[in-house]
Image 1 (cartoon, one colour):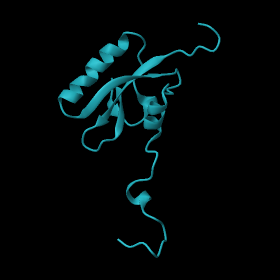
Image 2 (spheres, helix red, strand yellow):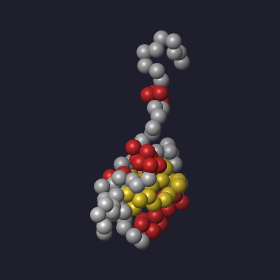
Image 3 (cartoon, helix red, strand yellow):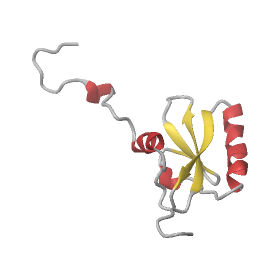
Image 4 (spheres, helix red, strand yellow):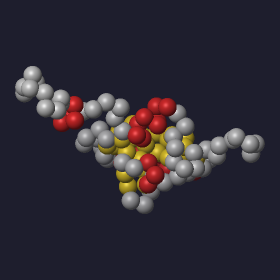
Length: 106
């Protein structure tokens, strides 16, 4: 490997069907919301990992199963996947409501 090259690995991601949360596949314990807990694959091993995860898609537990590329320290390589791993980029739910604003009523 040349200087500056990054070792590329893969993890499998999807969205949990019951609430839409982004999850990562752990072949020992199932799905987790934490990317650092995902099972890491190299090369063709990722195809087997996707196949195992697809079983949960067939059982309607997750949707949109696919492998993403990460570095050795679980950092996604694309901007899209970095955003997905970090969580929502906007406030939502109770956090989206203005705090202590007397002009706002529900």
